[in-house]
Structures are given as C-alpha cells and as structure tokens.
Image 1 (tube, rainbow, N blue to C red):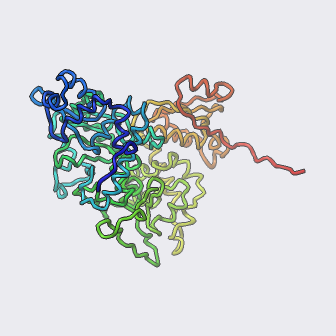
Image 2: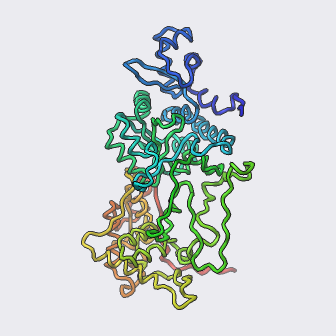
Image 3: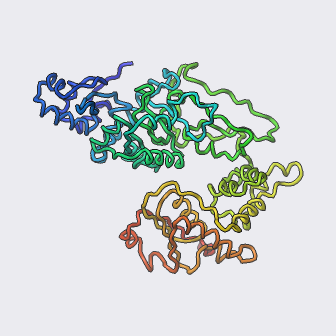
Length: 531
C-alpha cells in the first residue's frame, strides 16, 4: 500500500524540525541499507569531501542516517523508518525534549502504518519480535538459539546501553507509563558504535549487559529485537506494552503474530498454584485465568479470531488496550480474591502454605499487602464469606492461614525483605504514618524511590497504633512489620507536623519531588444541621 507523504506525514515532520536542506542533500546521496564511503557520497551530492563528512555526521547525530567503521573507514547508509529513523531521532534526547513533534511522529508512524500491516503480517515477521526470558527455558525447548539472550550476547564483543526511545516518546506526549526509560536498551556491535559516537549511549561490559537484562526481567519488561536484519541482531530492547510501540501495535490491532517468536508459553500444571501473577504481569495480556473449579455451568470459550481468517477492520482493534485489559474469562477470578480489598491471590498462598512453602506464600501476599501479620489479626475476612467451600461445609480459615504464614516469618532471625526493582534516586515525601501512608511508602520503596515518611505523632502506625487495642493487635507486631520498610530504606521522621513544623515549600527545597498526603480520618463525622 502506498502512503501519501506531505508536510503532515510523520515521515516528514519528524525530520523537518532538525534536518537542514544541506543535510538533506547529503542524505539523498546515500542509499537505503547500502553502505558508502564519504567520498562516494560527496561525488553524488557534488559537495567537497570535508563538507560532506561534516553534514553526514550531523545527519547521523540527528538520527537521519547511520554509520559504522570498517577497517578504519566510516561507512554511511540510510535505514528504514521503523525500526530505524524514528527510534534514532527520539534517542537524541536534546532534540526530542526541544521538539515534541518528534515524539508525536514516532507514535503516529507506528500506529498508522501498523494498522495497515497488522492483517498481512506473517508469524514473527513484524518490525520486532519477542525473545523469551532465558531462565524459563529448559533443555527440551531450546529449538532456536538465535532467539535466546545468551546466544545473542555471546556472539558480540561490543556493548552499549541507551535510553528507551518508545517510553521517551510517550513521556514527552504526556502519556508516559513510569517504566524504566534511562539506561535500559542494549545496542550491540555496529549499533553500539553508532549510538556511542553520536552521543546517544555509553559503552558497557558484557557483565553490565547481563545485569541490565536481569534488571529488566525483574521490572517485568519483555526482551524484543529488531526483525529487519534476520537472525543478525544489533539491539535488544526491554519493552513494556503500555509504551513500547512494537508490543503496543500487536495488542492495539489484535495481531499478536506481529511480535511472536518461535516459543509458546506453557503452564506447568504440577507447580501452578493459580496465583494469577503470570496473568497480571504479562505485558501482552496473552494469558487469562480460567473458570472457577466449582462452576456448575461451564462457559464455552471460543478461540480468538485471527487476522488470517477474517477481514480485519477497525471493529476488531483494541485502541483502549491500556485500560481495557481482560485478565479473566467471565467466571475466572476466585470469589475469595474478588472479595479481598487488596485483591491478594488467596488461593495461591493457601496452596503454597499447604506445600510448606511459607516464604513463597508470604512473598505472594507481599505483592499486594505489606502488612500480612497485622491483617491476619484485624481483617474483616470478606474472603471467607465468599468462599465456595462454605456451600459444602465451612469456609476455609483464610485469615488464620495468612496469620500463621506471617507469624512463621516473624520468628525468623533473618526476615524476608522484598527485593527493590530499581534505584531511581528521586525523593518522595509521605505525610502520615498510618496504614495508607505506610503502604504507599512500601510500594514506592519497592519501585526504587527514596521515601521519607513524616508523622506528627511520636509513634508510627496511625490508627493501628492509637485506635486498635493491644489485646486485638499487639504493638510489637505493628513495629515488626514497619521494620521491613526500614530495611527497604524508608526513613521516618516522627514528631513533625507538615504545614506547621515544616512546609511543602520547605520540602521541595530539600529535594522532594512528589508528595503523598495520608493524614488519616481519626476525627468523628460532624453532624450537619439544616435551618
């Protein structure tokens, strides 16, 4: 299909703001994916070699062309728009921040051109393809080594790390998702040389490269590689479907074949405890929870339609994929999990506890609730009211099991401390050390922020400490749960009333960049009278 290229086309306005006519003359003398020397390019464009060299480098720094060195000679060539020109122009941080139209062009190009390609795309032949997480592969499934992280990295000796261009694009558009943007995408070989020499990346060691890959997996990011060079790979992107355009297009246009690899996810039924973490964390929404075991009238689930079998119109797209995510079939979520205000995978931690895996069970609870020992003592137990076992005899003692799991950990000499995903270094102030403030501090600390909690009382815990009697909730249990936050690096300042002892303006001057106000609701409701 032919596209009209005018001043409104993303291919035009992505470069219009940063490419001069002289740079364009040099670019027009280059060839698509056919490397040439500066002397060859100068002869074609009719400019002196020195001037051509200068303009070619300026065009490369912008992102309009690429180059690499071979036997000490720089070779220049044009590349396709995606993956290619769009990513490289956005990777020029100074230009992208100065001209937001660059980020807009990247998003628009991926969406408009992706829509026309989605029904025609052979399996795994889209602009990018997904690589599996290496630790999930066993010996029997290693059928395509060129699609394994280790195989790709071990073939190269030159590595560099750059920022994520997709997430930068979405951020400058005001549509960012908060996933890692800085120092997260890997450039290899010739790609690394280009990115470093144009100031878009920095060289790293092989060991640092594997650490970045590991960090990406811990932050629930997916590995993707460009498809334009076949089995040869010059980059490994660590993507999220909420901002990265290759994965976004596969979901947006309901065409997962655009990013498929040779691997298919499989559930190990012997080890699965139905916690649902795979469903909640899969960026592609490829998995869904099945029906409740106790369902009396099973629902027939039809196979998902494929662009290969239907006329693929906009009616089959999912443009609201960011907030229109379906994690379960119609009767998929366990009723206990549905009723839990924290939406903890109840059936998951009960199964793990039954197996004696108390720390694994606790780890699963911690993903949604940082205070299992506290909740095990004061929870209203809505989950038990919904437990389908009650239809037979009695509901499972869910809350007592949670309390038991938490108490086992409280007795350990070395407490379980959740792993921090990243270290942003940015300071956030939480005002109030009650349940809401402490929970916010916990999840921010896990995500890698430097958190300080300000509490006007001399003790922490809010209504947990001052509102619930000790015979119902022991104070040492509260303090023991708060100790985990301290282990995560959360700093507490008691006896400080924000607004009186220190102001928001003062805190901003101290470097705090965001604030969470959790001042509580300790006072009773006022009675309003009408005249």
